[in-house]
Image (cartoon, rainbow, N blue to C red; front, side, top):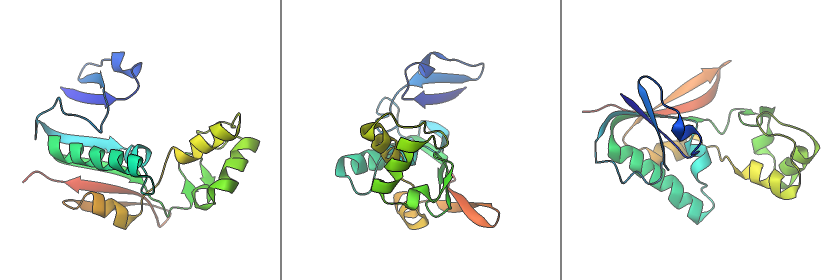
Length: 167
């Protein structure tokens, strides 16, 4: 049996043959014991959990990392790489390297990838701030007991994967 934790309650109702889906927050998995799971997997989540430059959001990111490391004996944590030239959520070149004051204006003008055209400034800024991509040093700092693998696309690092193998 596999377990999937999802913050969207509508997805928590879905159950599959070998996957139990539960509503929950990866920043607080206190209902699970230390080392309860043999393997944990997270795909493109950590960049949505927090921000380095916001203490409340930083606390969320640290909590997410702590809970993953606490409940899983082994894990694979994947995140898009900050220095890949195409922002994966906006699917737009260099969008994540632009100052926020320019990036949100682009969203007021047009749809970008998964982000629809913004309805107003608040909507645009919320979309821009919904993901903060990490570089290798930041990711390695968060997951010090792992091997950080690099996934490449056309010779460039596209994403990072923290791998911890059970001892």
